[in-house]
Amino acid sequence: MPANTTTDTNDGTCELMVKREFIAQHYLTVPDPEPPEGDVHSHQFTIEVEFAADSLGEYGYLVNINEVETLLDDIEERYRDTLLNDLPEFEGMNPSVERFARIVCDRFCADLPDDNPDEVTVRIWEDDLAWASHQRTV
Image 1 (tube, helix red, strand yellow):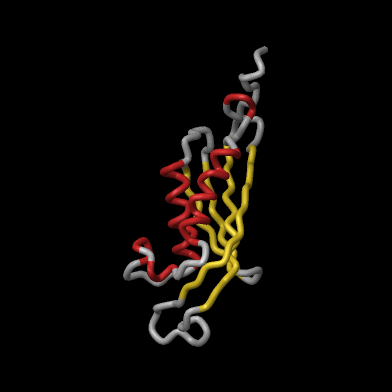
Image 2: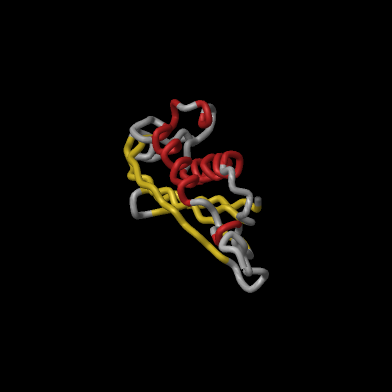
């Protein structure tokens, strides 16, 4: 059998996760947030992007990690050392970690050229204390 084909069919779920860390700032805009949440403050955000599928694609990959890394480079460049509140995607919205996870997941679902994954999950950690995730079937 040629090396670029797969024999994996419905015998379980394959998962792959790639992560990236950077520092960004935000402040919450909900009514009367308690300090420090209502003041500008920094977090070390860790983005974990997880892909899942019942079978592997061409060459035995779930996704091409190089393509994932390229998208993570773009995402890190977009958000690193920024005030999330100032970005158009957060305009008029509370820049919660939950909303951040949805925005990043939307980006992966729209821009990942690989069409093999069945699901994409983005988990974003605020420091090492809390995380939120957004999951989407592709």
